[in-house]
Image 1 (cartoon, one colour):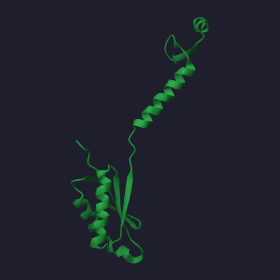
Image 2 (cartoon, rainbow, N blue to C red):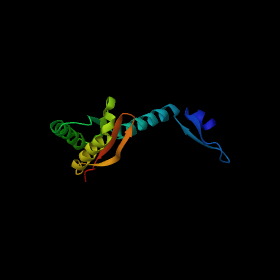
Image 3 (cartoon, rainbow, N blue to C red):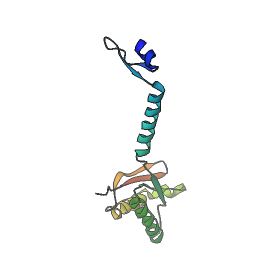
Image 4 (spheres, rainbow, N blue to C red):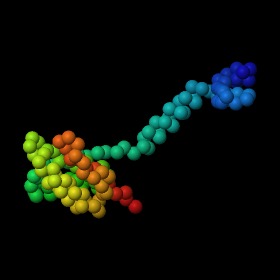
Length: 137
């Protein structure tokens, strides 16, 4: 303690459970600043996952399907995850099989750009499927 006062620095307890307790003489404010700076740099390096959504109806026409498929291709090329879903309105829930066929067709056509993370799954009035982009080598 005398040494830390003499140097005008802080005495910080590193390991209190050790026998004798381990302490270090440092400038505590500077230490906190450096730690905050390190945490901020780590956060900036972390990859941010972007999820793009594409919505279909159970009886989506071929032209609309191709149009939305082109958008899906662009999203996967840009490195975003894709959430494709079929939304069933009212009594169209009867066409669950058509919705599943539509999503599986999309997955098959986007096979070279991404891989299916979650197969089509019905949740309420939505049938959802996730496709993750393939990593570039």
